[in-house]
Image (cartoon, rainbow, N blue to C red; front, side, top):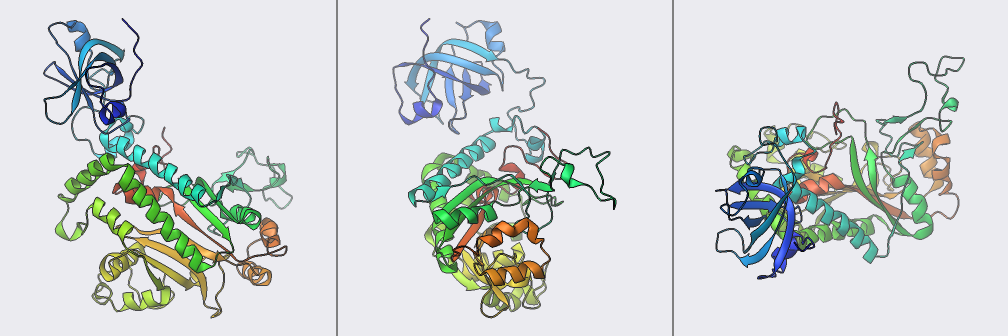
Length: 480
């Protein structure tokens, strides 16, 4: 038998070579009537139908064609008369590359809950939902690099192990080689970090921003795209302990330039998804609609997934100061009727996602960028405004999700930054190099962070962040 080169199913669907002999390899989704094998190789949401003449085939071989088995089929590609596919393979030869015992294979052709699929995260990529999410995730990774490359930004790898805490969050994973059962001690009983691998206390990074700023101070426009870690013990549908962040930093950008870039960036990503992930988004849109049917009326979304994506692509983002937003929220119906879980009583309140969503979905009916936040609820590195109360911070808010981007103009004045660091009691020994940037040729500069998984949640319409990363890391869970 001639050895045909495998062709991906997506290729055969996009440019069918009808009448030609082809080879397709993939995993069996279903085998109906001992005749129709639905094969999927992950290149597309669509299955290839392979038609076998069971009378001419070895019965023992066909018994091994079960859901989950890996097969290779060779035969002529023909136009299909059946519903649901345009072409099919008329099988001449069939080989089983890997068996899947139907008694033990957990992914049988029926509806499985997302909770169940998280328990078998090593197999869930073989479902339509997860293969669609992974393909969209790939498209978004590609689009991120494409966007910045076209704008002349440089990609910089910032360290994953760091001695500084960018957010002042304090919720970090320690990195150590010390014997934890018997660590070396100083005379006063504290742990002697000088004997550790790096000779000091280190942790996994919470953000590449501070190191990114050093690169922007010599290359003008850079971005990082890397893993970040937060040891927050929060078991919510929006938090992960390990996630990916995209963080551009730009010299000579003020807060307005920063907002312009953020808006252009997310619109580019959403449009890229709409243009390049049609089949997967249509599938995920239908999936979300089916899920909505089971919810009470007041919890249903006012827009479908595709409508939300189009909404972001088509609308100019509304720019509103924090102060204006507080007035709107304070006088809003849900606040007056005590419908908000967190009531807005006064200026200075930290906004929750219910407030952010109200502004986007109910009040302005378009994506919103909030800016000029109270300095007391924002990080030390944000540029202080002249009112001495607010900082030049900005957040981009989306429907269904709330904040998707957070950023600011950075404080470029040495004395102001030094005073803020002292005020917050941040150890200068950890940040001497960051302060140095303000001593030698300081420049106005800005940047923002986009949590990549939050973006994927928005683009795929999934409800839980654990379902948009292949192997979620959450409290009490580092399986796989």
